[in-house]
Length: 109
Image (cartoon, rainbow, N blue to C red):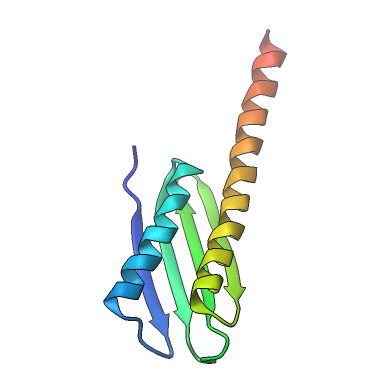
């Protein structure tokens, strides 16, 4: 099992340690969808305080980075939206890998 490094940072503002911890907890759920994740980098852009933007970059072993963006009126909606988008990408990738392996075994048999 891989250990996933989770880094939460803020641009154009400051996040409290409690908020950083809560974001880390929400993002750590992503490990369930793809077990080869090596790093999750979360950037919260607070330049427009009324519309906080969240970007999550997921790095995985032997695969290109996956990125999700979300911005909404509330920080937690932005975080949840970005996590959901990345969940979908990870699920889709996992299915693709699994289906590809099944096709190869069927060809050999």
